[in-house]
Amino acid sequence: MVRRAVGIFLVASATWMAGAQSAPQAAPDAPAQAVTVESARSLAGHGRLDQAMAQLNQLAAQTPEPAGVERLRGIIFYQREQFTEAIDAFTKAVAQDPGDRESMEMHGVSLFRLGRIPQAIPFLEQAKATVQSANIDPDYVLALCYADVQRYDDSRHAFARQFGFAPDSAEAHLLAGRMFLRRELRDPAGAEAQKALDLEPGIPLAHELLGEVALSQGDMATAVKEFEAERKVNPLNPDLYSRLGDAYLRAGQYDHAQQMLNRAVLLMPYATEPFILLGETFLKLQQPIQALHYLDHAERMDPSNYITHNLLGQAYKAVGQKEAANREFKMVVELQHQNDPKPAGK
Image 1 (cartoon, helix red, strand yellow):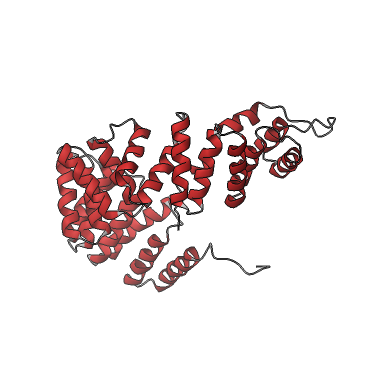
Image 2: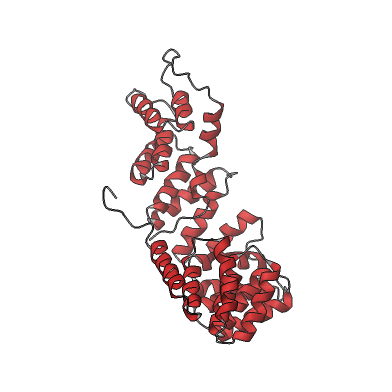
């Protein structure tokens, strides 16, 4: 299943949206205006996609078909998540104008959204080679495609271009490792983090990334070792203390977990994670009153986190407040199923 990348929706596209915002919008009682690509773009830019598509369909029936019709049809299909139809439109647009880089990009991105990664790569590469784009999203999508087909060096180079890093620098390896871990590519992520350390032993965040990889693999001893190594390099990184506390908690070293999570709370008092982890730690230490203190605080910050409510239920049960415990456990079930399909009429 293809993961949706942050920013992909923005690819489609600053160009036509800017045109739409600058185009005049007819008043409801104005005389009927001529149907043109610009009028359709204006309608689309104001969210009137059905009317815009109706105009584009009229234009598509003309011979010759006006330039830009198929590109805009493809973008509207993309916005509706009708990716197969978008691909058909972008294919026609490129056939009409082989230099239409935007349609090439969007063709590739639409294939990516359908999970057709190998087919997407040539379109994204061709668009990149045709014109140097000011839009960084195609590079990002291309990097994800390379990663998914195990072209990790190419993926790293594409990520590096976004940030202006040298393609084989320590920073580029660390960036790629972070992105790979987001894709749950744990072994490649660890390899990239290690390469960053080989190139620059003191680089911040590399040991933290290695710790996160170990944490995701259930290797608590390695996670603690790497997080502690990061603490020597980057002692005021607030996320680090939360990760380290989590690792100590999972390793059953509750006193160390409490110590690290207390530091995390001091450094990032508006994040819920360390409060939740402290609540869990005090439950493990059989101190439910203390657990309630931190979990109540976490619940006030984020009432929709079912993990918090589950731990609150355990804490209330431990102090003999069965009604409150049942209320929290009921909330857990409701939150976990709040997005389930509902029967008609419910």
